[in-house]
Image (cartoon, rainbow over all chains, first blue to last red; front, side):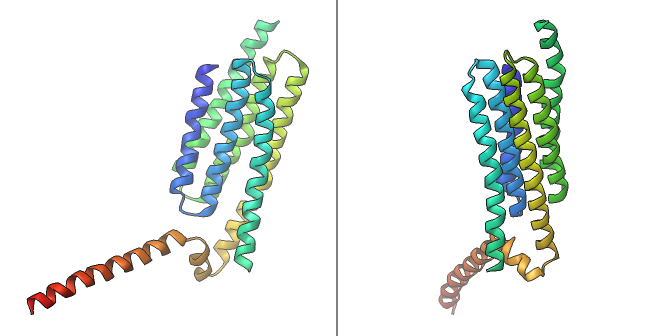
Length: 83
Length: 135
């Protein structure tokens, strides 16, 4: 469980790197989505590892916020391109 | 029974980790933003689904497994919808004119061009007093 949590943390790092070096805005948002999904997975594994049931609720809220964030960013970019 | 389920959850967890690892390799190595989208979607659905299934086999109550399934559903739906939005936005920007593409996408290169212009002005400013000193 500990190894799995740390390995999932390591797989979040390329998403962060893509957020920094991404040439386009779409690439940055893809890095954001990759990082948020990795964060949800790490929270679920930590909830099992540390026997903290509240972390599953945190993961659920995190997933909902990540879903809203990308949709809102795309809508904002489209509004900025049109007007 | 519990030990059997623990043993069965190991390949699922390792498979989820494998999908996350391939997604993170793909988001770095793939050349195009559409192929990167492909890699991210695999990590979202398959990776998190396998991790959630492996953890659901280890859960003590069925409510925990239901919550894990709900989290996977939310992430999968948001991943599908957001990838459609991002892909359609990228297609619009690609089919739009190159000037609009430069305006909306390439803001940092435009800033770099401005910085280069400033730096050339500075070198000109540095060059002019030298020329003046030479003359």
